[in-house]
Image (cartoon, rainbow, N blue to C red; front, side):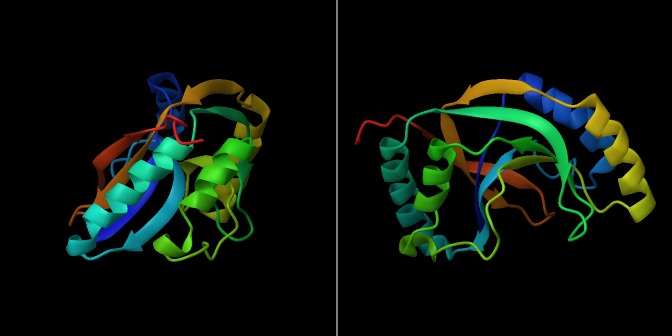
Length: 172
């Protein structure tokens, strides 16, 4: 089964992201707006309890962190994906690294770019038009994130929460 780790921003931020996603993201109905901390990975059902235990330990090592979206950006020319850029900070980077330890299979094959996707799989023309508009509109939203979520993928491709872990920093 496929699992992943993400954080969900506030309802206000989700509403802003969804105002674009419902038009520009074909995965709109598959998952709530989020920032991915660990991309989908396959785990046998017998191993998920160990994964959850390790995530509990990680949550105890990390304090809540600031999520600051600062602008609209794109992964073009690699993909026509539009996103709200999340300013990297030591807390986000450290949490990401902890979720990519040897226990979790090591580092990701992609560079970590904290973001909240607002559009994807756009044609080149559509991408250029929308990116130009959204870049001018901009965004500057700041909030605290105090939990991360272990998600699993259902047969229809949608994602749902398996377990939630409150970031406490108690073990620092």
